[in-house]
Length: 224
Ligand SMILES: [Fe+2]
Image (cartoon, rainbow, N blue to C red; front, side, top):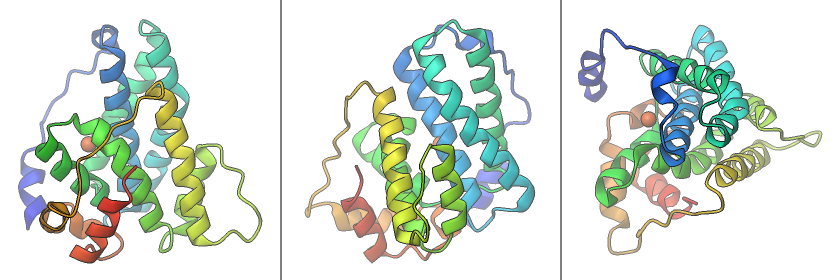
């Protein structure tokens, strides 16, 4: 299977020293930090998710929401760099447990095609991924929405949980990006070829809904 090769490519050791991240530019801090959030959300909602990984993923997302803005605004804040280094390391660990799914499939295809930073693209493919999985995993997505500060109305529908959580995530991302936005040159000339690549990407089968060309096209249209 596609992701078997990924299992074999993992590193055996990592040197995690927050002091080495203090001089990272703000854009690199933000892009990599948002990738951590994506790893946690996707591991939390993939077909490979499991109760032990879920607890770790919940904490990772809360840590990123609290500490990434601090790490960006105060680059030499050692507490923030340490919390983000731990969250990033745990996010990498979750890749070998809950794995990832269609958010990363979309990001791998678009990042390679348009030569954009991985974490940046992940931050744009995550909101539509949130909306896509909310109908099948409403309680999990609601938990993520709560981390992001959403106050859900009573009897909220799964679709509304997805919409509100995606909007809260976009607001969090856009604050970190200082209002800059990323455009993807997706149109009728390339969308079906991109969608086919997304369907064939290694993580796509771990999405909690079937990723076929129709869904991939819909998701590509709704990236923002
Ligand atoms: Fe990633």
